[in-house]
Image (cartoon, rainbow, N blue to C red; front, side, top):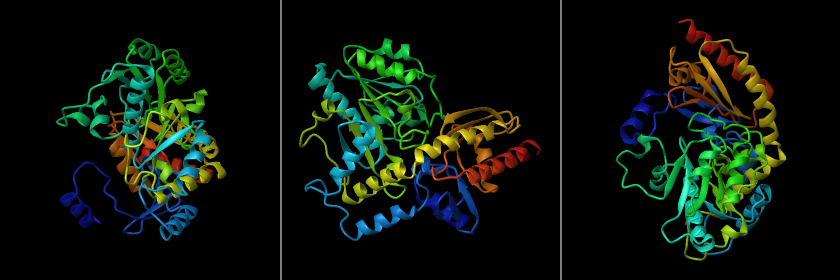
Length: 401
């Protein structure tokens, strides 16, 4: 195992700090390392594996389509693209979509759409559009996206950065109202901030933000790349407050854990601002991705994965709240999207993740104090019990050393 880790460290850019384990195969909620040890995956590839590893229907769909047609680019029409976007629109209440590959690409498209809409529909003077974002946001790693991050490390020595973004405090609707000007095009917001530590805003916050945006003719764009597709117990996290966004960003689990697939979905007024030549992607909307994305959405709906997330998320929070340990200072989350705040007097979140790994559970820290739990949405009640048993045992070990 160590030789593989050493080779990766030698040849691969050090953009990540992975746990010292080499995963060889996966099935359902489980993965196995190259030495045969089994783990429960409570990371789900940052929520991209909501269907679990190697979901049989998705694998079969992938194989069948791969033998038929994988890519033509958007130079030609495809029998897979239209039905995929139509179904996604039906599920989100929106009118049309732009298919891309990664979540960060979907965010970039949202920025372009919002600015073009501001100039051509709202009447903002050219090159003066502003987009409001929140502190502690995470929307990706491209140059434009890091330009509106509040995390210094994401931006250091990557300048000059892209202008045109205003940051406000997350969870403060009045801050949004105060930040809006005649040049404001959009608010881009995570319904729950994932990389910031599973930060859940105050009840009513999203609803109030949507109301403020509507009043001021500002687009409400929900980044549901990590929180959407059932992760929080609703198909979209915005549904917890009955908010209908003007646009939604989807990704991660949209590819069924097999391919990068993302979507920018929006109402008709926004969609009309893009015309041939204004945007494109060689792989965006390819036949293989559309077929997989369509099947991934159908499985979420037909297998009631959102509902499973809601029920078992409540059960998980209940079980975690019953663990008596000084290690936990706070629990937060919705559905199967949970953050455990770790008391830094005892250890770091990475220390906890290393100890959990030793006991057969894989997760990953976010910042230094939060352990995230985001298992595949196919997990069952007994497996949640198993997760909590491992956590209890591990926390007891860490506090009795």
